[in-house]
Each structure stands twice: as C-alpha cells, then as structure tokens.
Amino acid sequence: MSEIESDGRVEQFGQRVQALRDAIGAVVVGQRRVVDEVLVCLFAGGHVLLEGAPGLGKTLLVRTLSRALDLRFSRIQFTPDLMPSDIIGTNMVVEDPNGQKRFELSRGPIFGQLVLADEINRATPKTQSALLEAMGERSVTIAGIRHELEPPFFVLATENPIEMEGTYPLPEAQLDRFLFKVLIPAPDEDTLVGILDRTTGNADPDVPVVMHGPDVLALRELVRDVAVAPPLARYVARLVRASDPETSGCAEAAKRWLRYGAGVRGAQSLILAAKASALMQGRAHVAFEDLRCVAKPALRHRLIPNFEAEADGVSTDTILDALLEQVSEAPPSVAALVG
Image 1 (tube, rainbow, N blue to C red):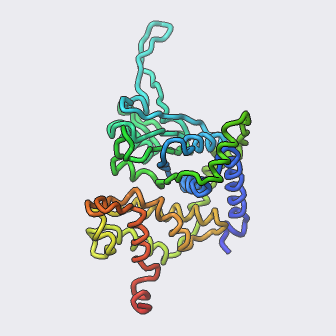
Image 2 (image 1 turned 60 degrees about the horizontal axis):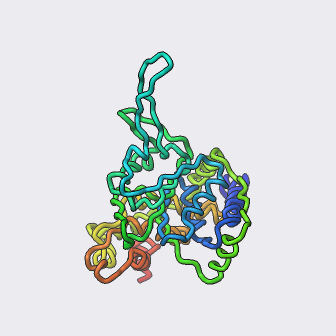
Image 3 (image 1 turned 60 degrees about the vertical axis):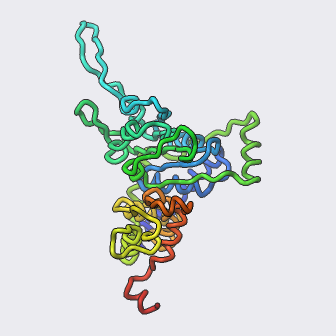
C-alpha cells in the first residue's frame, strides 16, 4: 500500500470528487461521462475543450462548476470582431488628482481563475492565439511586462461543430494546449425529459460551494503523486509513436489515415489524465484501463487526418480505436512470444 493510500488521502479525494459531482448534478441533468472528463482535466491541471451543438448545456456546466468551486469566474464571448486586447487587457492612460498622467493596466477577462471561452471557434485565429501564453505558462505579457495569473487557472472553451456556419478551425498550436477535447452528445429521451422538468418551471437549484482554490491545488499535487509503473509509461510512448506516420514504428492505421500524430504533449496528457482517473476510481496507481479510458479525449484533437481519412469520413475516434487495437499493451518482446 502506498503512502497516500495508507494516510487516507485517496479516500478523501474520492469523497471530494463525489461532492463536486453531486453539486453539478443539482443543475446539470445526465452527462456523467462529460462531467467526469471535465473533472479529470480540473485535477490534472489541464484545460478542456467542449464540443457540441448549441443548447446542450456546455455553458451551464461551466457556470455550475465555477459556483461549486468558488473560483473567480470570467467569460469571454468569442465573436469575429473580438481582438486580442479584449481578452488580455491593455494599458490605459489615466490622470491622477494632481493632473499627472500615467499608464494603468486594464485587465481583461483572462485574469479570472475559471475562464469560459465561449464559442472559441467563432473568432479568428489571431484572436484565438491570445490564449496561447496564458494556457501554456499561466501568465500574459502586456507591453513587455509579464503578469502571473492567479492559480488555479482553468480554461474551459466551448465550440460548435466545425461544419456550422461562421466557425473557424482552431490552429494546431491552440488545440495542443487543451488536455482534453470532450464531445457532448445529444441527450436521450429520459435525459431530455429531465431537462424539460428542470428548466421550464420556477425552481432554481442551489449549488453549494464544496471546494475552494487551495483545495483544488492540493488535489492537483495529490494527482502527481499517483504511481505509474514503467511498463505503462512504455506503453504510452509506444502508442504516441505509433500515431506518427513519420516514425518507423507507426501503426498501420497511422500510415493509412494520418498526416500527423500525437506529440510529446499527447503523451504527457495521457499520463496526467490517467493519474487523475485512477484517483477518481479509488486507486493510487495507474492501470491500463485508465489509459484506455482517457485515450480518446486526450488524443482526438492532436491527430491530423490525411485526405483519404477526410474523404472517407473516418473520424479521429475511429482511428484511435484502430491504434488501441494495433498497439500491444505488452512489451514487444513479450508480444512476439505470445504471437
């Protein structure tokens, strides 16, 4: 038994996560998988991209999470005319009572702790790039001066499917900053009935505060203490390399359908997300099932399909299914003996 299991921190983590699930469930109907994937990102210290058609509760989920965490919330509504300075802020000329003029920083909404980037793919790539430094380094630079962002800093971006009118594809560098890309499905009949019951009456569910900023930071540290056995780390390396059609060890699916595979950030995302997933399952060590559970949300936005895949309508999730099937969890030497 590991130290964090023996001192009860794993059990406490599970209790805190369940309390957070319950708080979100007071407002958001169904979508358990979506909620859990967002929580994995939160505790792994990454950002999340939520994709789904309008009206599926993306913004509601983010607002509810901010209320349950008691973090400073800010929202950026992305539109085609939005400028980078509208996101990070700018220096303004102000005059003091003595008539002296000076520059004063007018902070943009990026200075929140939980930032909703709503409909991020309705802005131009130039504006989207304003998030790169903030998401990668937890800081912004304005007029040559670096400003640290208050932790925990967590970006949840929503986007409409790229086929919808008035959307711009996110640049690869921007996509790579997201730990997960979470797909929000349309609700089934029972869930839809629950949504109608909850949203067409006078009831306004109360969302209790179950966690604060320092709690989130402490749980993020706990996630990094989760053990990853060397064979699992080797498997992640093989899987990521197999997705790159330029490497000698690439899988057949990568050769056929991919232009570019997942890179180093993809491997890091798999490990961190699997650690958070293991803790949410009550374990202080990562198992292969954790890696399989997080593979699609961690990698689907990092794979770049080639023309053949796009022409045949092959999704990145289909390609990932093939990669997971073709890359053995056993070391190559063992897999050769079994074969």
